[in-house]
Length: 93
Image 1 (cartoon, rainbow, N blue to C red):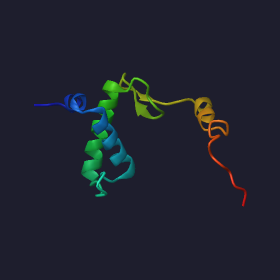
Image 2: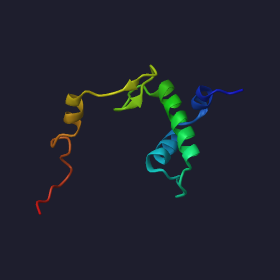
Image 3: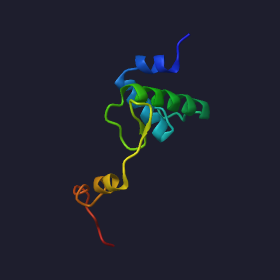
């Protein structure tokens, strides 16, 4: 009997990205909506995958240690500061 971690170890990085996009948008690549059960199972698989392969975790993802990775406010502010968003154009209306 396979475990969730076993399944997570067997999926490709490309499939991980597709599952991640599906969970984030609530839709499969073909546009069909995920059911609540599909969302729950996919999210569990994503978390198991991250706990095995997420060497450089983003904010609020699961790190390889199995812990939730959270950035400090200072780091988040620097990531989203005006200088970090220099490719955006602001329009005053």
